[in-house]
Length: 189
Image (cartoon, rainbow, N blue to C red):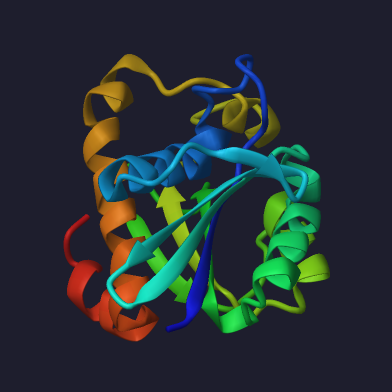
């Protein structure tokens, strides 16, 4: 039996709850619901719960450090549960993918995403799995304002399907490995 850590990135508090930047929290909440996980508890500068999925344990984590310090929370949970970097899945918003597109990636750069930058700095390098949930780029205005805005009414209609797809991909990564999950799901979005 091994332990996996799925960290959804976002910002704490009701002000940010429905922002595009919080899609990582939303996916982790969907996984907790799907798997019947116990209630989230405060620890590791975040909120976490732990659940058995098949033969493995999965820790679901929502860092409450604000996006730019997410790696501190992830590092603390990794250390406590003895989770190696290659069993960490980071779910985050992705400007470079259109809304509704979800892609898995192992390793790579941070593309200016401060949550990913913090993950790489604190978790032991870039070698974790990323579940990249597309939010698209703003037609005008600054990306910093866009990611902190709520999904529009058209996006909200499809948001549950996007969350389910991202949750399916994260679950497949735990059950089958990232490569198999990519082969199976990349054509779906």
